[in-house]
Structures are given as structure tokens and as C-alpha cells.
Image (cartoon, rainbow, N blue to C red):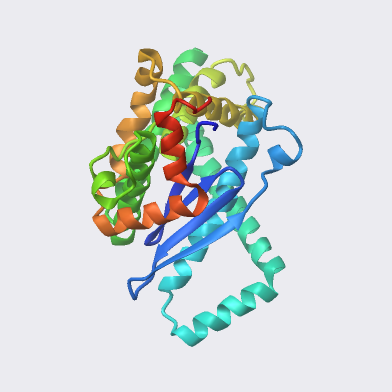
Length: 312
């Protein structure tokens, strides 16, 4: 049996877990019941045999993660709309009939999210630090300051949204997601009590991915030697997919390695996760467990671990 690379995402009162070609969305509804939806999904990189090409697979994985993330986040929000049950059922029926419109809406949301992220975390730091060019011609210094500004903006953004009550709940479910995966990987039975004992931090996390992207971009942008501001910015934007692919490879490797060097390089992402995760309660842990159970037989996996039958 191959080592699992199960990963997930916190939702509105829920957790999404993805394993191989399936992902499950578990949401605790207002009546306290846990709704679980399982979706089969064949990634573009696997379909076209690109999943074995380093960096390239990371680019597609990043885009696909955003698509699944938006789709499952939208799904979880439907349980908490201010509509009565009749309207909700009608909406679900309409969704089945208008899947093309839904796909266009999701695509539009992903494009908008990417554009917003590029504007705030790439374009804005570049504009803020442009005045340095009046004082120095050092590309090293410019890239370093720009990177620090970019990380500062990201940390400020996370800090500000953490005061929102809904986001606090999402961060608690984020903690439940990580604790459940840590419990699974440590070979302990998935019970709320066991899950809550584990760390809410994990090296294979989207938050860590974002921090690695920002750090890797500093080194890449040092080598852009273009005087024209527009071309310089264009080259930076064109490099983002490559930077994302490299960052994905690091996160993927970090999830399997316990070397001192990898652990040291993973520290910045883990520190920021202390902001994007909160300690969950037992009910949140239960939701995360249900999501894992929907996409894998964790008992069989842990039995294989005990027998030494797990392959990397």
C-alpha cells in the first residue's frame, strides 16, 4: 500500500478531505447532523500523464486545489444561507439542472481570486518598493525588501481576518483537519479524543505553501534584470507558475521527510499556521474524521503501517 498524501481544507462548519481520485465534504448542518458528500475527481495531470513530471504537476495541482476549494466552500455555505428548507431543496434541484452555469461561476470565482491575489501579494509589494530604485541598483536588496513587504502584507491580511467570528470557526476546523491527518499518520485510531491530542500544525499545508512561494519568489526575482517597469512586472507574473510548481515539490517532499534541514525550512510555514489554525472542539474533530472515512479505509491503512507494508 502506498503512503497516503491525503490533504484537505477547512470549510464553513466543515472539512474537505481529498485522497487519490476522490474528495469528501463533511458539514455539520444547523440541526447538528453531519452531511457527507463524496465526489469522484480525475486530475488533469493524471489524465494526461503529467503527474510524474516535477514542477509541472505542481502547477496543475495548485489550480485544481483552488477549483475544488471554491466548489466545496460554496457547497458548505449553502447549509447556512438564510433560506428555509424548501428553498434550499429547490436550489439543489436547480443546481443539478444548471451545472454549466455553476461551473462558469466557479471558474469566474477562481479567476477573480487569482487576480486579486496577484494584485495584492505580487503587484502591490512591487509598487511599494519601487521607490528604492532611486537609492540603490542592487537587485538583491530590492528583491529582499519586496519579499519582506509581500510577507508582511500576507501576515497583516491573516491577522485582520482572524477577528471575524466566521473566520475563527473556519480556523478551528482548519486545526481539526490537521489534527486528524496527524493522528492518522501517527497510527492512532481516529476518535475525537485521539485527534484532539495531536498538533494542529502540519508541514503539508496550504498556508506553508503560500509562505514557501513567497520565499522562493525572492530568490527568483533577484535575477530579473529589466529596466522597464512594465516588463519587469510581466516577467515576475510569468514566473509565478514555475515558483508555485517548485514550492509544491518542496511541500510534497517535506510531508515525507523528517530531516533536520527540511524541518528547519518548514519552520516559517508552521509559525504562520499558528495564526491560520485554532484549537478545535470534539464535534469539529468528528466532522474531520467523517470526511477522512469517506475517502479511505484508515483502519486498513494503519494496519499496513504496523506491518511495514507502506511504500513511499
